[in-house]
Image (cartoon, rainbow, N blue to C red; front, side):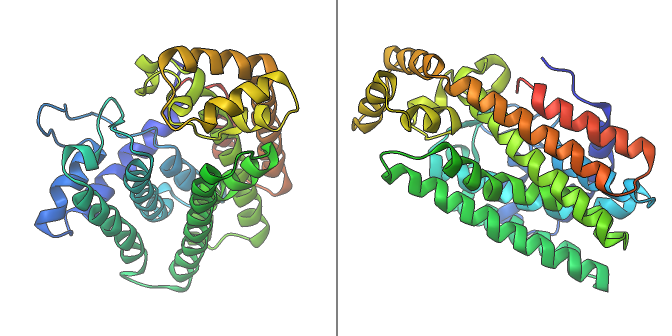
Length: 337
């Protein structure tokens, strides 16, 4: 597996106890499924996990405070809020996509029920803003406003992604635009919210937000590659899972938009009423690779990564957190899970 930057673990140790404390304020009926989702509890033989997710967004929030000269604790409040929003979206996305596994065990809707998952996600959404505004100040109100805007863009991106299901052909550019909302907006908020809470200069906030947005698109491009060619033992999802569900991810969109034999054959597969079987998945993988879909998506990840790194040089930041932000960007590009 690709080595994880130590910064992610450092931020996790700062932020996760704060998330746990926030979750305990929920009503008793919701605490159990929410704790399960975060990997803090075991249900019906699904083992409790030491860690939940990569911790990318909390690390960005903490580093954005440190990058402008503030302590990590200043960014931790924003990190909690962003992570609660992110996990609300994960719980709901699993219902929408019908995914039964996340992080190598049953998703919340599968382990409990769809009803439990819906209301648990709703609770995390509300809790994010409650955390930020419990003791309001001008910078906290600004942070909450930015988080609300990012959440709106994230939901619009999710809606566009769902609409793709009814479109026979989706262009590569459509995919990038959709991911700018679905993934880029929240990462942009995560990468700048610590600076907002630290009352940083506007130029610093804008630079960090741009860095996060581009990093988010790069992250999703890599995710789309892993969704087709990732190792299931590492990703926690079946091989070719995105193809099985006929998702129009970046590699697929690039292939479908071509006028070629590969695009025609793949389009016929996607037009079928049933999920793709294992032989069809392998064939689809081959078609996409031969058409250049994988390579085009890799190139997009590299382009967005370059833009993210360039954004960091458009304002002045403290050197150590700046280097850690660069390290995270490289990890996003090279990760295998």
